[in-house]
Length: 423
Image 1 (cartoon, rainbow, N blue to C red):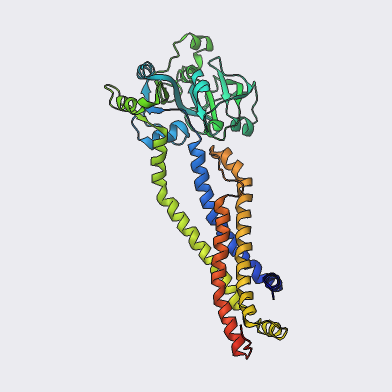
Image 2 (cartoon, rainbow, N blue to C red; image 1 turned 45 degrees about the vertical axis):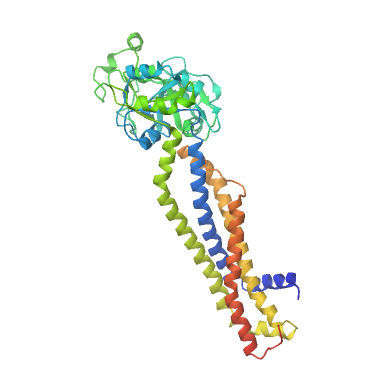
């Protein structure tokens, strides 16, 4: 009896026990899917975060902590606890070792999407991925204080296009009494998709951010705010008093540590300058404990799935006593019975692991765009990777090893029944 015929016989034997075989395959598939899903989500999220910003040497803000500054300035997660003054920003921009700056002002929102005040330098110098620049898919950049450029996800999810009128909300509330409804913005451009938080952002001029807060100096709308006309506002000095953060590009990257130290120890207003990559590394150190715990749980679940393979074969041994007697009567040796049990375990492990990989790939295909749209982080990893192949091989090998237990039991039972043909 050849190896191929033993595999075919093992498959037909499993098909005769479809119910238990399918349940075992499902247990193995789900355990493998959990393990690979955790790994791909972890690595994909890391890659997505790492690709969010590139080419920016330093991010400067109020001293609120490296991770906090990174999260609210780049990923729009959380809020700034303090801001930096405009004169301080001008001093930073005027440094001889600074090539360009991007001022960023955050705080308002529109239907759940963050609003960011900035200037033309943002479209010229902000990079993501491996140095990809932002592109305008439709329309143009803003030129007037009441114009806005939308991220791709904002335009798609809210159904906005060029010429759409939007009303911003003071803070991150749900709107209503905190709406800046007296100062609507006109959409003049839509950015091309980036798979980063840029897609979730509404971009307006810094002067526009100042203009909509005329009459809101106390944090709430003044009764006199409605009496201030647009012409009056345009006559005001709309230079912002404070901004949230600054993205810096240096003349020479070799001076990054020197510039960082100079800004962090600067006299006067306290500042925090961070290197984006270093801050991300600190973030991954914080999350590494949770990641390891999730992977450990996933491996344990795979072990449980493999135990289900053992249980499935063991529980069928008594029922298959007649089957094995028939096989022996037709010329099968005890060794063939042994390898039949091992082959069944291997098939359950291999097919279950393969199904688990397919489940993960289907999940990435369906949920990946939804997660990127909701959180602005692109989960990567669609398509077979080395870890998928290694997982299939490892689970199959483990199942084969586990299959030796029922195989030995079946062999002993065959011999006990008087089937003593030499192996």
